[in-house]
Amino acid sequence: MGNCSIASSGAFKAAVMEAAFSGIIELDPSGYITEINDRAILMLNFRNKQVIGERIIDVFPLIDKHMMDDVLQNGESLSNYMVKDRKDRFLINVEPILDSGSLFGAVILIQKLPDLAADSIQKRKEGLSVHHFFSGFYYTSEKFHRAIKNAILASYTDAPILLVGEDGTEIPEMAECIHNESKRNKNGFASIECNAIEAEKISQLLFSGMMPDSSSGDPSKSIDGGTLFINHIDRLPSAIQYRIALLIMGKHTNEKDFCIAQTDVRIIASSKEDLKKLVREGQFREDLYYALSAITIRVPSLRERMEDLEDIAYLFIKKYSIMYSKPVKLTKGAYDCLHEYSWPRNVRELDYFCQRIVLNADKRSVNEAFVRKHLQEIAAAHMYDSGSAAAGHGIENIRAAEIIDALRRNGGNKSKTANELGISKATLWRHIQKYGITAEYK
Image: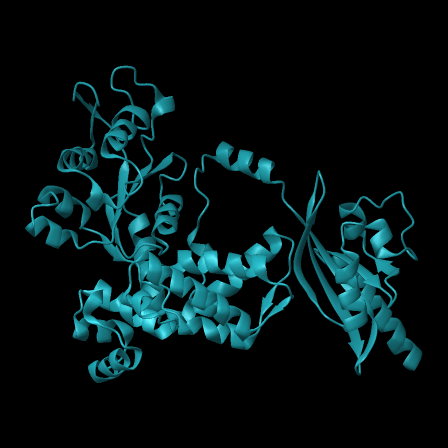
């Protein structure tokens, strides 16, 4: 009976090895190969080599010896480690084989990553000009779920869309997702960042470059049938706003002579400002506002969906660990520490912060103290850049920076600030007194 059980166990293991989608290599405690499946042989081009009994670092030198020592000597896992040579890229995971605390070797799981150039060519061939899809978002927040649901429903229509939210949120990515989910996804996608380009250049791009030339009808200069994303549309001068309103009506105006041609382009616009308020103040065209506001989707800030913070940070840490071939993991305390900061620049700031953590980490495991130190540095830099009152008083506490930033956003209004921070007005007053915050934030 015992022999039968052992035989069955061996047969099961062999079946798993060959059925797996990953390449699998089993090592003994000294790093010598004891088993390898056919998929790994093909991936690593071992067909004409006898690798059983060879050291893994001899036949697969892309794997770092010191990292393998961490696994085989210390029993540590190696997760999402990317290696590459001139032709191929591989994603490696290594798990120690442990039994009752004793180390019996390791298992290497290998995935061959697609060629970036070939992938880009294929996407261009299929007509996709953007690469974000709704399936790429990770969230549990009800507010963000509502935004995604509304964006998906909006993508099935052909109406213009207004995305409202703070800088640093996923507004540009959501615009791409809407395009890729829509019936226009085989045609072009273009985006204009009104914060970064002068009005004259924007006019040239919109009405001489990307849109069809009314005299030549050159389709190579057109996103006709596609989508145009205008980020920070509130920054456009009135004359260009008028031409955007015409564009929504299917009328393209030539840059030189203002002649009108028919065109078909879907407009997605964004603003962090209250466009209705700007209309009342005469700073935004009423006709364009009503054309855009039929479908308005509010994208929540990161501080409004803090339940998603750790999942998003995990994905960024994983992305940069792979990008820099530097496996880094945050401890639970480190993830908890992320909640101490308000992330005024939202997901974009979290992205840059995680990149910073990976690049500066001197250990694979990053603890709370390391994260807090870097959080304090970016909070201090943010206070200095924005002229925060805390900079003048030498306040380094992250909570103080959060309160000061919120007060500045709300023009010193205590009730609005307390509501934004999710605390009572009395608690806000106590914090103001505790941190010595003055009226300089106004």
